[in-house]
Amino acid sequence: MDQLLPTIHTDITDAQLDELYAWPDLPQPGSWVRANMVSTIDGAAASPDGLSEGISSPADRRVFGRLRGLADVVLVGAGTARSEGYRPARIKQDFADRRAALGQAVVPVIAIVSRSLDVDLSLPLFTEPLVPTIVITSMGADPRRLAATQAVCDVITCGDDAVDLEAAITELVERGLTRIHSEGGPRLLADLVAADLLDELLLTMSPNLAGGSFLGTDSVARILAGAALPSGVRRVELHHLLHEDSNLFASYRFESTKSKAE
Image (cartoon, rainbow, N blue to C red; front, side):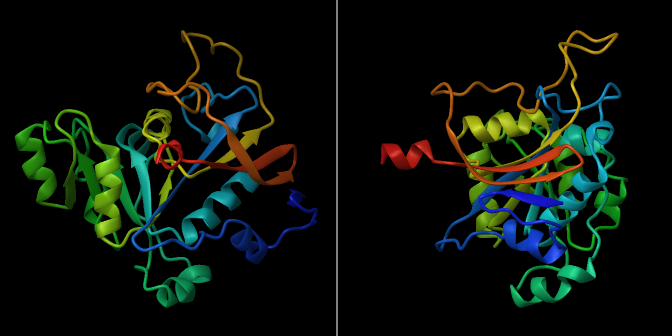
């Protein structure tokens, strides 16, 4: 893997990757919310089977693993967790000493966002985690499902009917989870952007083209789907760019519209 911007380096090591993707120093209290997504060059978030694996690559999976290494929490929508077969995070010796030095848990917490609480509580994500899984839902969730979920994991309730992501982020920060790493899916990512909560988008551009639809479907899911941007097009700044086997790995940083208004 080579770095193209802001400077050129070849054969990037894991240590150099960790430095490139290092979490910024944060004010207290404060948080940094980043999202990691893979897409085709025309923005599709999955291959025809509906999964991201078909457009991923060994280089993408390498970056994916490094990104989780020093995150406090992995934020993911319930649909993505189901379709991608999420399991509990496992200890990686590469990061064990650094996590301990930073006062972090041995692995990042997995936090599932689910308005409906349609989650399978018998999965290893809830029965075998090294650190308790968090479920983020709304106060309008079904009371029976809510009670069942609270019995097996930590539950954050934010918002009346829909999940209030800004309040959820605040709750995570109060738990000391300030390095917040979202892995989608497209609806959660769109909601984060619309609420002006995303600080950084880490986008893998896979050298594939999806077109307008796959056979048997009406459309192709793009990396953002659902929530509208309240202020129209958002500008981002390219922080760095990497390359391997025609895959591009870009880090884009957002300027908060809230800070501009203040």
